[in-house]
Figure 1 (cartoon, rainbow, N blue to C red):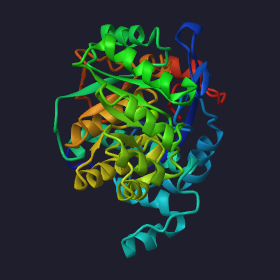
Figure 2 (cartoon, protein in one colour):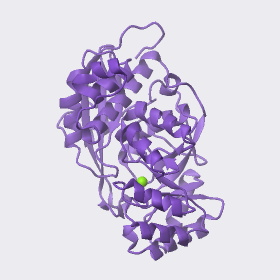
Figure 3 (spheres, helix red, strand yellow):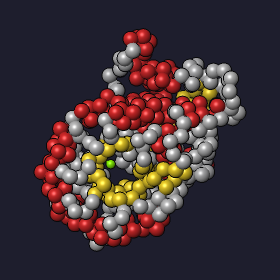
Figure 4 (tube, helix red, strand yellow):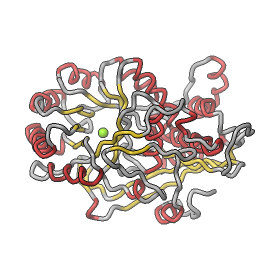
Length: 405
Ligand SMILES: [Mg+2]
């Protein structure tokens, strides 16, 4: 794992998806509109190089905790890997184009615009993102530099994190969020609302109960997971108007961005969205339709760190901030930390309170909030030390040996 200047090509030897299934003990399970969550499914992506360096990324099969991983793994191992072997891992933008534009990548680079393959928004795009994150990690290790140094340098030493959870009913929601504060010194909190509440009045009552316990100084966000109608979302925003919500996330279904824009037009509450959107093109549409104030790309869904950085730049040109969706393992969270370090308009990150074993046990040095913040890691690449024993205990493809080939 030696780095340094003046090094030659970092040739890719192999690329492999490593699917993990991490069961949750009963005490750490929660129930939302996605049902009772009994596990976290994770796809790690390992890029192995001839220099002996292995980069690690993450590709998400679903926005939530549980999602079948077969399609993402097939996209990594079957669709993308053959075109990457033998290429120089340092050429990240060109490799992104090779994955996105497939056999026409050469034409795309010649013309100056992408010529995407048909599956540009689903499992294959998530796979692309996982490979991209792993490439950044490998190249950072090769040069002995944290990824943010390769992305333009440091904007901040520490980044604010918000505790993302909040599923309890009106009687217990304050207690649930208050317990988060005790765990990590958080000053910002996100709770779930929407169809799981049964009606808008209960959703608003839960927000009021949370605010009463957290006090006026706390930042409080609500996430509807896209489950309200436009009238319900408007009604909800009226009912919480005095509760100083920092944002309402995905009030309505993301298949109709105009509906979200209609809510945003009518409401005083800022709207956040974008966790399931893929590539800068989708975020351009979200911005143009007026759908959101805060953009939430997920590097493991939207096209990797490369694309998340482009989306942040696009957002900055429209005076939007970015609060990345990071509901995943320590690898995805590490990618979020690098993004926040390098991008001026990424001031806050999601810290999942779902008890994901792959967030807390996958690496030797898991992210630990203190005073509601996390320090940006200084180690090479993503600064990760993956625990092979954890990988071997949870992987479901019959292989062993951690993320090594
Ligand atoms: Mg969300």
